[in-house]
Image (cartoon, rainbow over all chains, first blue to last red; front, side, top):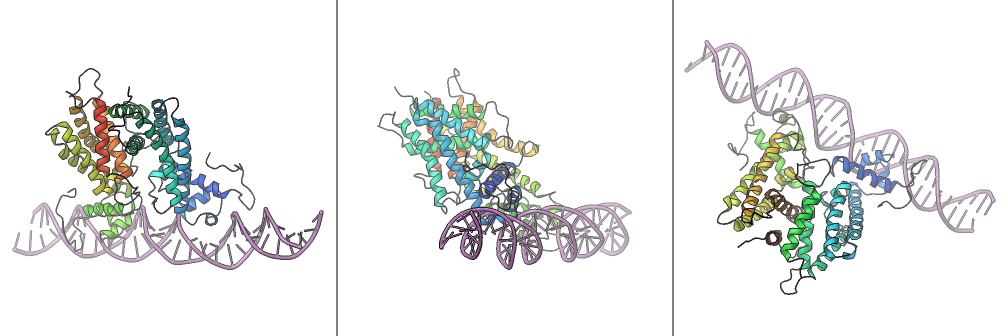
Length: 212
Length: 212
DNA sequence: TGTACATCAGTGAACGCGCGTTCACTGATGTAC
DNA sequence: TGTACATCAGTGAACGCGCGTTCACTGATGTAC
């Protein structure tokens, strides 16, 4: 869970008690329903059962809320990816396969997070905290790529960073084209998971893996 | 050019004469500036120098305008891709490389079209004309994949459709992560073009290409 | 344990704004005769 | 070539709406003594 503290089921009384978390949850719900653009500060307040002025106690404006959602998204994403990768156990191939599936599962089950992270157009340069969180999530992919590359003969070994970027691009490409539940559903002869798995497999073979 | 007819440089008089085209151009400009969500019907009208009621003569609502932009985007995309592919001349590799570069160039130089096509969330199922245009653009990739696959031994040859989807996912992944001018610019050790070229190269090697 | 007080997190009313949409209208264009 | 008329593509004023934002306020909570 991203909203850790205590989950009050029934916020009551004058003080909400957990408004910041409630607003973030409202934003997630609204983004999931109508896309990253289709959510307003006022509506999030209404969702949380609070006056339209209340959110200003916790966020300067809509963008700050959005950035906060993206931040938590990256944190959760890092966790999910790291758990899937599991330090490359039992071997890099199996782990990479899990990683790819986890990537797609995240994009599918957390479309709001995914939107906020990659499609909301928040400039990462401005927000160092956000940028760092994104980098940490990417570091998981990068670690995986390093472990894979280490299995190649050092002569002509491709840079691990490049391999990580390739894997990211494949996963992101498939996730955004085919991996969302409802919208833009194009008829496919196979699931997004199978498609990504096959793609990564061909790619790895192209790298020379598995190597003797 | 997508807006073909006659490009009046100075729309004047009571009748605009070319309002439909002007509105689409305005939408492109606004989408490019502020993303697919950051454009309004009223603002497009203002941009075209026309009263806010005028656009209703040409589009039922904002969504219809957006769909029209996406439609033209796919048409132009198909043209651009087909020209780059050039029927696979002089050979499928060279042509595929051109295709990838053209894909990225389109995403970069026509961000508004690209957004409308892939990020505006227009349900393609509802709009058959739009869907068809998208299919025709994809058919170029598919044709390329077929030519590539034909070079493989028929035993164990992967389905061309799958290969086409893989190529699309790679190109789209790189375009949306790294291939836009201003926003979300992450420091990369190489250009988006080089990154995609390398990725496709590894992938093709994984397919067993070039084959003897 | 009780009291005074500072601080905090909410209220609710108000505002200006731009958007989407409608309406009766009007100027321009094209066509029939 | 001219006239009458239908049609088309725009105007501009008006409306209701929801948003973002501010303001003085107030109820609840925590702390010092």
